[in-house]
Image (cartoon, rainbow over all chains, first blue to last red; front, side, top):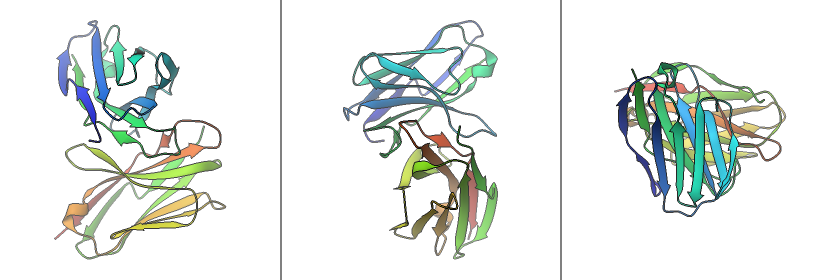
Length: 113
Length: 109
């Protein structure tokens, strides 16, 4: 998995609870991404980061926040989880955005009941 | 926003068949990616291309910039090729990738 670790791999939580997903890389790549994958949709970008403390919103950022205090870690937080956020979440890394290969983590399956 | 369309959505083939998966997009791009997602869920990058053709083993990717179209070909298909194949594009400018919905391929022995 090109030095990318997502944790946890599976999580079940209740509506209204906060949830934080972690992505850790050992490649020292500048760009990190959080995607969600749902049936009938392609991978959709939630947020991405282009450096420590530098982040930007993606296509489906409502209800999510991110933080990157170290190059190797990119955290995705659902402040108050909703059932519509039940999904598989993927983290990815790349040297630059779009014009270099993206390497993906193994994914986190989140169920919000 | 770039719209990425893949066809077919689903494809079943007999082992040994030549397979083509298509990807079209709506606005100019600087790069196109093909990725593979296995039944276990892991996603790996197969190709990144901005012109012409690339080949890796039995996989061939082509792109026609003028037609805004790319194809992924698999020669001598094998059951282990069964996966979802995903096309993604980077529009002109420093923008993140936009992904297609994927093509689910099943190769039957």
